[in-house]
Length: 225
Image 1 (cartoon, rainbow, N blue to C red):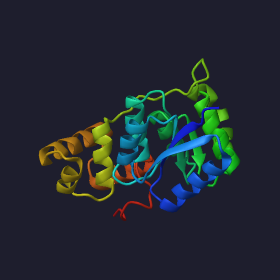
Image 2 (image 1 turned 60 degrees about the vertical axis):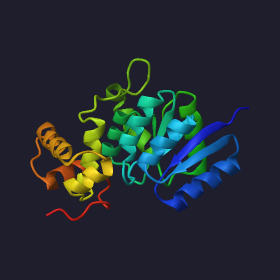
Image 3 (image 1 turned 120 degrees about the vertical axis):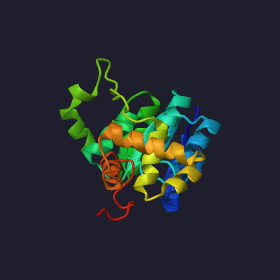
Image 4 (image 1 turned 90 degrees about the vertical axis):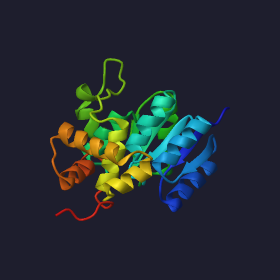
């Protein structure tokens, strides 16, 4: 039987190693690569074309939500299974909106992880049990007539999400421009568009929005005054 190929995208080395060892022991899976940040996850996905990506939400350089959008745009057949330590509705909602077909809590058992990978590979959806119970109550709003997850129209462009993440991480416009390889005026224009689209008019407000939307985790950002 052909093994299910997997890309691990997680910024904590010890967590990636744990997932790899678990999957190696289970059999039936082949880990093609490991990515410590969102940008490398996109690059490795394009290189290896994995069946399934295990994607952490909060990662440096490019968060898992935006990395998911970029991977699925390039590789629509790949399935993304989101990983998080948090089960907030906002995180689950934004994961679905980004195109993920499953959401696993990091404290999930090895049985649930393997089952989740197999089910999303077969075209199904999978959520950790505690999340699944909540979603069942909201099923009419979240599932279409074929039983597939509805995807909300993203409000921001990919570049705007990248800029938003770097703003929320405390990067100045010049640092953002250097990291993204774009001009300073382009960054300023993206910041202006973000504020207009979101009706938010200061950096603290953009940071709070980034946290609430799952673009970064609250532990990542600086204290907001």
